[in-house]
Amino acid sequence: MTSSVRLALAGDTMLGRGVAEQLNRDGPFALFDDDIRAIAADADLVVANLECCISDRGAKWDPRHKPFHFRAPPSAVETLIWLGVDCVTLANNHALDYGHLALADTRRQLADAGIAVIGVGDTEADARSGVIRQVGDEHVAILGIADHPADFAASERAPGTAFADLYAGTPRWLTDRVRELAAEADIVIVTPHWGPNMTTAPRRHVRRAARDLVDAGATLVAGHSAHVFHGVAGRVLYDLGDVIDDYVRDPVLRNDLGLLVLVDVAAAGPVRLEAWPLKLDCAHTGLAHGDDADWVRHRFTAACHDLGTAVAWQDDRLVIDWG
Image (cartoon, rainbow, N blue to C red):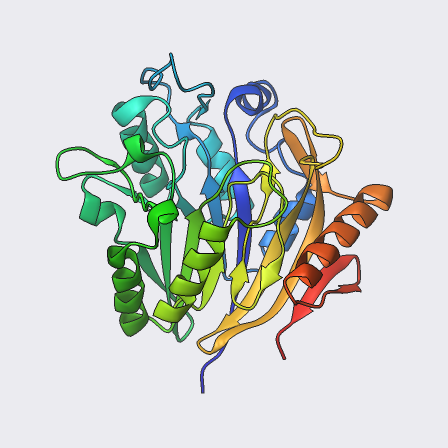
């Protein structure tokens, strides 16, 4: 008889620019309220999309054409340790913002802290490998990929990200890798950085890729990239939204409101999801309350309803039971 594993899933975790300034000013433990840390501590594994490099070296990648470059100081590792982060994916459009030197620093510092890194590597095969962690009696595989940008892709000659051109269709290497991990592990988590920013629902190519990943053996798919959360359909959490940043607030899409998601997952699939509404101020995140929490509740409930999933509100959190 198999048991379930509790995962804490954090979407875009951006610790650069204004967040880095806050971190340097007030220290690595001032970016999140203690409530966030306490919720994450209830998980067996904490997985985040780290949307920046961690380094004090490197030069901006293609500064004439790339508008945003995010780099956090080395002390950002202490923030991740304090939050209890076990694994980060760097398969995203900011991993190489300060080039290969800063990416190498990021990987080294995270490894030294005992935090697993997925979605990047010295070679294409390395970037696509993922990790397998044992949690109790269960082996949990975690795989990170990104559908943009192509110029960050790892090759046999240069380090980079696990790039998958999902717009052209789900590549064979990706579904093959999911099948391989499903043969090696009890639970397979795929965390893609996919689709454009500031959208309220998954695009067609994202939905197609989600079906292909599940068909290949993914136990759970947890995406990110839009900066706002999307709904849940079956085994797919289409977008986790952001957990910390310094971005300008959109008054309609409310990218200053987010979710911290805990999911109980067994080999047969997800069992229960609990999502806590978050309030993202500039460079600081706490739990959302009052009207902000109500907005998150209504938005997530509607987004899930559109995908055929029922959501309940219990004890200040959003709940999905797969039964």
